[in-house]
Length: 466
Image (cartoon, rainbow, N blue to C red; front, side):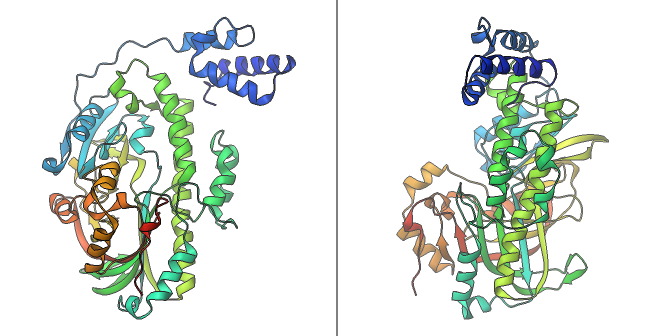
């Protein structure tokens, strides 16, 4: 529930036992303990919960105000097309006393805490909202030993492959849970919070979320030989499958649970800094978050693996190789000569020689890239085109008939999708790529042809003219 390790848990258990002896039901006791945890001072005189409440009041006394007048060095790419809110959030992030270095990518836009497109290196501290709510959101591309022309020749086969082997939506699950070794990870049993969500995670394994998550077929134009595993993909045009998804409800719950703990422990931070509250890695909560994030990373990778495996099995085409990467995660890396925690929230790892995938929109191209390892960017690059307007604004501005005509003119068939994901809601991906030419080399360009996303409950998102 978020009680501090040690004496607090003993007092909380004693209060729970006393409440049970008084005849309270388990759900009533749990609700009361949560209320004490959220506002201990309001329960300090309670006959049952007063002792644990008083202890927490003492634990939660405000620290001395944090000094926020020192800037860690940081650099911005594509500043002219980044909204002021994101710039302000980045400026706040590099003022934290734990910050070492920062970077803002050209696809950046405002989020919670660290802006989306933000990269932040910290000393021995992890910031849950600098990783993001969808922990380990990632990309995966599978490249087939087939020409993209097969898409036009057997269009219905590819439609059926996506429709039968994907699920989209916030609470979407499979009726029959998919099998993968990730569900045997001991962390499901050992982690005090993640274990509560194992059953849900298993049902959601192999599914995609809402919003900008997608699964799509397209044409991959390889410009330079790409080493993938033991193989080398030579220049040419190939059929490719691209997916974008994350850790589903597991990541969401872990992010919010540990953010609340971090915020409760950093109450001396000003209000507009609270979503940047951090956990010390050598503390119990920080270690728990790191373990949860690591598990979510393995789970998100397995999520994509199942989606691709199911579609590949249904098509029975030979596969040349795959490329994948997280873009909502934290890593232990060397920064300016010291070990740091590098948060990439909507940013692609771009260390020297590292392969990654940077998508566009449902109609704009995506890119398979190789990192150049620029220290000033903390070995990072953009994770996509980046939104240029909110979802609400997009819903007001666009209409399906217009979007449908645009997609058809560009040779894109949308099986389903939300109007808030209209291509015009995003920045120009080619401008974004030009702004970060010093961060990555483009090895291949991917053009979407058959796209499926969550319709968001709007049936007009389905279009097909046969």
